[in-house]
Image (tube, rainbow, N blue to C red; front, side, top):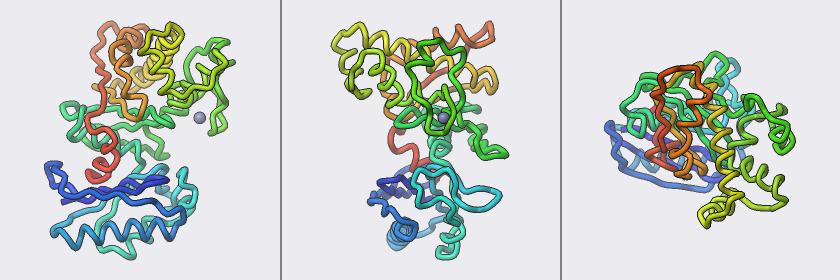
Amino acid sequence: MKIGIDLGGTKTEAILIDNIGNELFRKRIQTEKSYDGTIKGIINLIKEIDNKFEKIHSVGIGMPGIISNYTSLVKNANSIWLNGKPLKKDLDKILDKKITIENDANCFALSEAVDGAGKDYNAVFGVIIGTGTGGGIVFNKKVLQGINQIGGEWGHTSLPNRTNDEIKYAKKCFCGLEGCMETYVSGPGFANIFNNIHNENFNSHQIIDEFINGSQRSKLALDNYVNHLARGLSNVINILDPDVIILGGGMSNIDYIYENISKQLKKYVVTDTFHTKVLKNKHGDSSGVRGAAWL
Ligand SMILES: [Zn+2]
């Protein structure tokens, strides 16, 4: 049996699954916004599961950011109290179990590749389009982390061939670069562009509601959104050529994307045949914690 832990900025969730993915236990706690508090929360969850169940083989932890292979310290976490800390070493000292820590977008991709929407495919590209934009590459059920541990970090590549309007309406990205995919296809990015064009103050849910009620401007915004997504993903397909692209995060719940993206992708991908599937995730919000367990 395997424990998975999804270490988020506000909540920490733990599950226990058996080796075919059946869920035996699940618990969610508030994340304490300090390093010591976060460690204590993780330890308590593991101890609680350990007391109830036997034969626990491994613990996987998914988190925003990663543990650097070079320094063994946390980097790039938006739970900033973790950055620069030796999280894995400190957990290893307290627990006598095999612990693996991985980026949360990679956990999402792994979860969907093992027993989710991508279970029948070898090359899976998992995409998070939610508050932020991220991605993970899983090949033969294994995460491709990369030499710099940024494999699949698609959110901070640039939208190709931006028009003057697309340059004008997008925000500068928090990462310091301009034109990042995240500023177009994350939920806040999508809403920001709509609001700049129409002088509104909508969030992404309100735009979708307006679309469902038949608004032309919201339909146009969604058409542009699908076009932005397709242009960004066409670069991924041209390089990686995955069997399947699986979408997760809040924006992945919009059915209009799946109905329209293939014909957009075909325009931008350099191939005469096009068999790439774009699918919705199977495990929803549970993908992160399930992927952590599969680590
Ligand atoms: Zn960026």
